[in-house]
Length: 86
Image 1 (tube, one colour):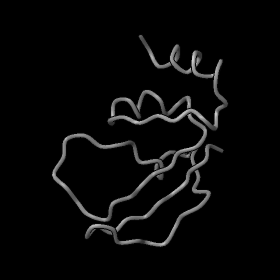
Image 2 (spheres, helix red, strand yellow):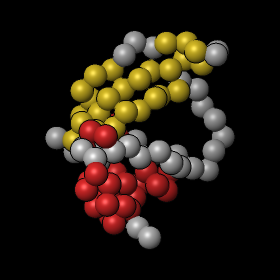
Image 3 (tube, rainbow, N blue to C red):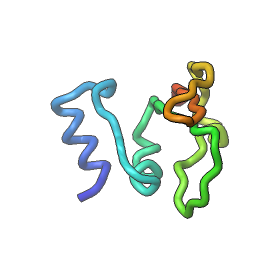
Image 4 (cartoon, rainbow, N blue to C red):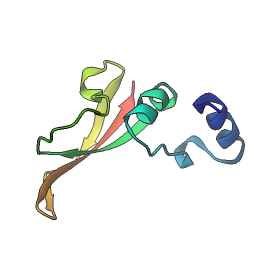
């Protein structure tokens, strides 16, 4: 019934490296305090939207560990970025 319990249950069977969060902005915002690594796909295009993932570039606890060059897939320019919590 909450993410804290979900992570406790998951950690009984899996290592931290094997637990991933996939969801919308609400799930990401709730899960961010429990995470130590974030794999982010940055899409280099603006969209009209009312929901956004938290921008880890603006949170002092997170730093970029690796960042790939821009790739174009299906007409979209993308950058794959790995963040780690300091």
